[in-house]
Image (cartoon, rainbow, N blue to C red; front, side, top):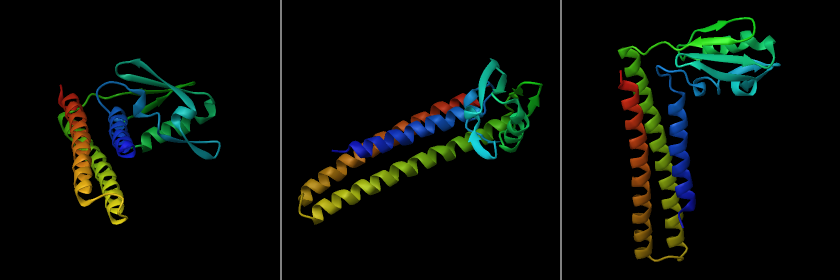
Length: 181
């Protein structure tokens, strides 16, 4: 009955997890840069479509473009991204040393993580709103009774509460990870 609602909640939780994987921490992670838009052949493309991103060690990423002529475009995209990363060019790749997190940077990242959590909760609220509109329409069309509507609304709220709980748990795990020294 609530397949679409469950699907939308799972998408919100999944999207939140993907966004959290991109957050810069003290270790190198290809997810930090692979979705950055790089100008390649007069069009913007995700970095993962133009190069391979490899982890050299826990602090270093190596980006090797398939076409060496876009090395400078990759470095520019990384510099302009606002991630606080400083790309270093060599003749065939771009190297990124991930700086250690300072206490101030940890707080900024934690604040941003909380913003992402709130965005996920908004998506869940929108899903609830849409589902409740459907239920009220069914009642207006005399497909269900008032008691059935109330029961369905309670069921929707239970699903929403579970989704919000998953989102909050995901955030708490990420916050612990961010604040861990």
